[in-house]
Amino acid sequence: MFGVAAALLCASTSGRAEPPPLRLGLEVHASFLSNQTDRSLLNVTFGGGVRLGYRPDGARFGGFLFFEQNAWYATDLFRGVVPGVRNLGLGLERLWRGELVRTSMVLGISMLAYDTELDRKRTTGLYFDIRPATLRWHVTRRTVFELTPLHLVVVAPVMHEPRLVTAQYRTTLGLEMLLR
Amino acid sequence: MSARIFVLVAVLACGLSLSSVARAYTIGTGFTEGCHERITAGAFREFVGLLEVPVTLPDEDEEDQDWKRVGQFLVRAAGIDRETLTETEFFILHSLLAGVRSPDTAGHSVLNLDRARSLHTDPAPVGQYEHSLRATTDDFEEGNRSAVDGMRAVIAAELTESLLLDDDLIEVSVFFDFYGTVEVDVWAPAYHLGRAAHAVQDSFSHTIRDEADDFHSVLQVLNFAEAVAGTLREDRDGLAHSTVLDSCDAETEAVVAAAQLATQQLFLTAGEARATGTTESIDRFLDDWYGFRPGCHADNEYCGNLHQVEIARASPTGPYLCNAAHGALRPKSLLLLLVLFIAGCRRRR
Image 1 (cartoon, rainbow over the protein chains, first blue to last red):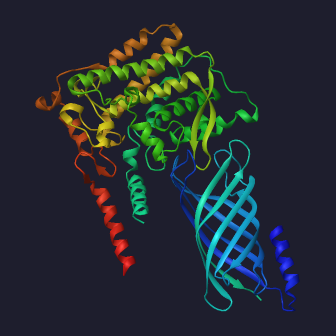
Image 2 (image 1 turned 90 degrees about the vertical axis):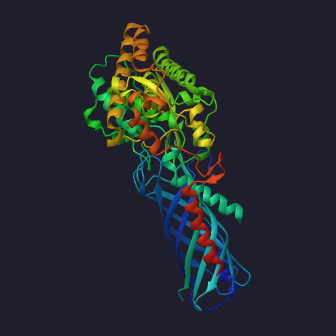
Image 3 (image 1 turned 30 degrees about the horizontal axis):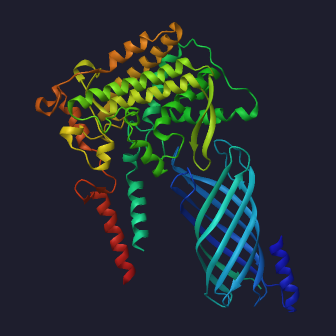
């Protein structure tokens, strides 16, 4: 919510009469290792996401709506890919160094995408994603290639006992396109 | 950068060597077959019809029902159809399976390498006897005898524990992918019986037994702790632990059948001890399956059991990455280092 509010504030102060500067982001992500106490060394997850954001040209702040599918690879009791979770959230972003670096944060909900051994599909909890530094390169005037070497995502679709809370250290690649 | 590469090599080596990490008849994981579960479930089928003990089931309220969800998974993984079991049989089998898995996981992930290593290389003798292996202090011929004594003590202790418990319902830790450690209800006597069954089954994959008496007598006890440390000297420390003997496939079929028979007799022994309130049946069971036959070694081809020794020697356990005794890298590790070296060269171009 605060991300969108900040974006709207930026938009209102920009004073431009052009169509709204909406931006579409597409990305893929993967994580491999975990450092959670008493967990497997491996925390293999992967997936993709889409974001629709509002950030005026030249503005440092923006806000966006984000959705992603995050699949998990089980290794302990059996081996195989499970659908994992679907995450939906609102985010705030800030650009640095002439749009070369983007810092962002998303807070939202995380929903189980399958029946686990202990909980039902659609059980819903919290989702948090913080990206300290996403590196950006303009591919065309309207398209930017983005690389986030490492960012922290906390996925917690089950908040009651026994809790399902995982911390993922992800690497993400994506494209951001100006829709206007 | 070099530190990162070392960590990466270690992670890859550990991942590729997982079958070595999960020693003993394997428990069911994403990388290993559920030998312990299969043997236990097989013995349970034969035993369940004779079971006449009062079992306390958890309350029916929602918070206490996690055991059913965990149990369904464990029972299915053991190859048993839940629908063929009554509620009581289901709870007993769930408790047995939780128990038979516990010595290899202690409620942690099998890929929690730090925990796995400390669990499996426990320097305390009892830590090795729980898996029917030699302790580091069990040297030479006398070491075989003391290891067998240690195994007997562990099995007797778990059986006694299963008979003496006042509170029949206990909570134990079971590891679930993504959740981590989950506490579930088990029936304590069956849980401890499962732990005893683990030691009994391991005593078939971790020893050389006498084929002439249908694998009842123990001739040699294998060594994991010193094999994995790279300090094993066979004349002093015994044969190295073997990953082939840990499997439950065609090559080890006869030994696995004997392990299943012993597990079944263990269950009957526990039932008899519970019914009579004496430990006579436990002593009889241990004398039947844990007799030590001395004097069987390489010079006399292990009293005609060379075939088992050859199987054991086909895939001996060693250090995961480096051989500390010889300062040499293992072939698997060399391959990994080669891959990383090539990757490094390609990056420099």
